[in-house]
Amino acid sequence: MQEASSVNETERLAALALYQVLDTPPEFAFDAVTELAAEICSCPVAIVSLIDERRQWFKSKYGLPADFTECPREITVCNSTVCSNDLVYVPDLTAHERFKHVGVVTGEPHLRFYCGMPLISREGYGLGTLCVVAFEPRELRPSQREAVRRLAQQAMALLELRRQLLERNALLTELAHAKAAAEEARDQSERLLRNILPEPVARELQRHGKVEPRFHEATTILFADFKKFTLLTESLDPARLIDQLDQNFGRFDEIAVANRLETIKTIGDAYLCAGGLPVPSRSHAIDTCLAAVQMQAYIQSANRQREKFRLAPWELRIGINSGPVIAGIVGHRRFTYDIWGNAVNVAQRLEEACEPGRVNISASTFHHVSRLFEAEARGSVGVKHIGAIDMYFLNRIRPEFSADAEGCTPNAEFWRASGAG
Image 1 (cartoon, one colour):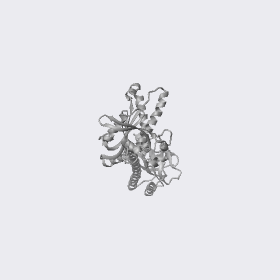
Image 2: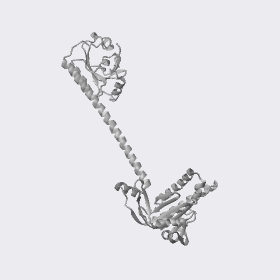
Image 3: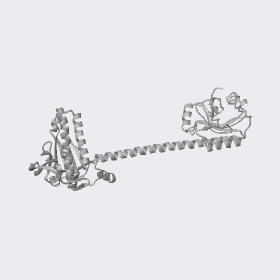
Image 4: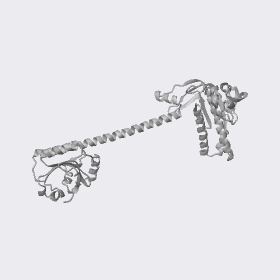
């Protein structure tokens, strides 16, 4: 006999795969169905089976040996039943033209009676069967045949429940992945926000959606830029210029963080940072001066390497001033933490009045750091729009407070003498 096959066999097999039931262990609920079917129909064997592309696999069986779990689909009666949409009832298989040559009839186990109902999925695909069989011809009452239909529906309901649980678990997994992705995106956003803004300011912005401006009475501002930067832009291609500027500012950021300063912004070749905000600090002037001498030491070291290759040096000028500022957030779509006040303007004028490779500080800053740093008085120097300002060149940490010969690294005595350690 030619093998029966579903009109949509590819789709049927795909539907069967959704249940992930093949080769799973026995389950009590399915075993109860087969036992009840055999008892109602007074048959020695009852089977709940699923049929894939090559076999009839038994999910539950009553009256068969434990090790008998499958058989080739082409020799079974269920191979035809799965392609049907209603009960297949054959009192005598040997007298039926369609089934008398099937392998399970002509050979072991020599079936004679068969009653089976396809297990039809919600999409209308036959996945397998519930059948009762016997080794002698027999008749079933209409009520018994109806019982086979109802029990097949129950078996299919169990399969559908399994599929729903699988779909729920898949959905929960998908939701878990989506939640993890959302949390990662949120964490990434928070990390980005903390990189752009000081952490206390970022927290306030996240909590309230805005940041109130703050008046900071005791701060120290560092303003730096590179003299003759325009000449460098003419001698270097843009990519190399930006790369080198990024390296310099990247190192400045590291120095600022190490000395408890907050980077405010960079504009072209200008770099602005400050101590004492947004969290107040008694050592704001000391921290800022430490950062300044370390920045100059870094640039001087880089210039020694540049000199070997006959490259133009980076001529860094730094101005430092201590005083009050107002700090806050500007912008709505692109947030920027900025500072305003005369103290900021003075720091910029000090930088403009500085010599390359030096650190120029105001008298207000000198007052905070004179015990710890060596400085040269420059007297009163007139600057644009402000007038005369008392200035000092900051040279280094005093030798007795320095951990290195260059006077860039403070020792333990430095912090004891500062009163901030």
